[in-house]
Length: 212
Image 1 (spheres, helix red, strand yellow):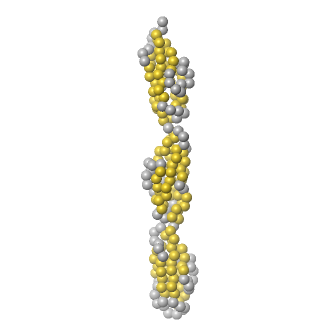
Image 2 (tube, helix red, strand yellow):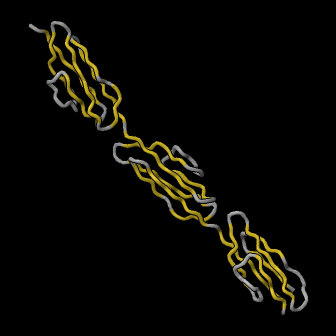
Image 3 (cartoon, helix red, strand yellow):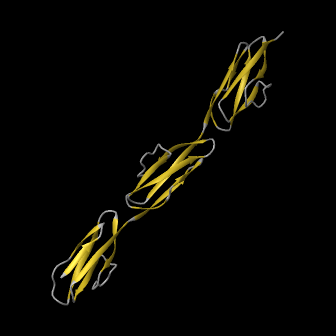
C-alpha cells in the first residue's frame, strides 16, 4: 500500500495498492502562492521532483512538503525624499512601507501595483508577486504677497518654490517716490527693484512718500 500525505499548501496524487516491485508515479501539486519543496519518506526516486516514481518493495508512507513562495519588494524614491520597507516577503504578506520627505519637500504619491493607498506616505503593499514601487516628492511652495498703501503700485506676488529668489518691483505714482520695503526675506529693502528669498510665506509691503 502506498499512502500519500500533503502538508499545507498543496495536494498529492498517486496513492493506492500496487504489486511488489512496481515503480508507480506520484505527483505533488502546489496551491497558488506555494511551491513544492520535497518528499519525505522511503522509496522515492527523487525527493526534490514534484513528479517522481516510488519503488513498491514495501508499504510506503510518503509526504509532500510545500513552502510559501518568496517575492522581492523593490522601492525607489524620486528627488526630495526616501522610502523604506523593501526586502523579501512570503506570498500574501502585507508589507509596510513609509515614504519620508526631505526638508522643504512634501510627499506626493506612490506608484506601482499592489499599493493599498497610493496617496498615503505610510501604507502597505500586497505581496503576491515581485513588486516595484516608487515614491514621488515635490518641493514646497510658498506664497509671496506684495502690497502697498497710497502713492504707488507693486508687482511680483505669486506662488514660488522653496528657495526661489522672487523679483519684486515698486512703481511710485506721479508726485511720489519709493521709500522702502518692509518684511522678512527682502534682499535690498531700500531698492525699488529687488528680490525676496522664498524660504517661507512672505508678506512684503512697499512704502511711498510725497515728493516735496
